[in-house]
Length: 211
Image (tube, rainbow, N blue to C red; front, side):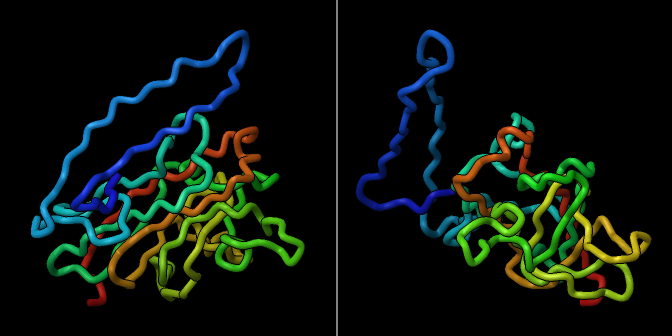
């Protein structure tokens, strides 16, 4: 995790729960490795990035705690990806359909785009579960390269664009919007804990098609 540092003092504060399961409190502890980079470091992460990927046109990105039962609450995780030389487009796909599992929709196997993600209804309730993935300028990877929006939510159907014709759904979405970044947002209403909502794991690949 990248954190903007102060030239003075930087504090790490951990808040421990005061309740445990069973007869006692869990023994909580951390082992943290800290590395500081100078302001003129050539691969310094851009401001506001919590993760930074560079040096390769393809890699795997994921939410914190992916694969350990559920994603974390109250997240604003900003995964930044450096545009490598000669490339203008980046595409994302899920390794497995269950690797996009970001909110507690009652029906597994549904992915929604834009209108039902990242927000609340007028009465203050999540439309389809607030938690979502935000990737600006997403388009289908196959012709016609239709714009599908900026946000994705749901679970159990990979990374797809919703269409009435199931044969027209694609499991790879692309964008030319720069700088390349993927943001994960979650609130504190973690009903997902009961549903095993994992978060997401995506493979990205940069290319020069259409540059």
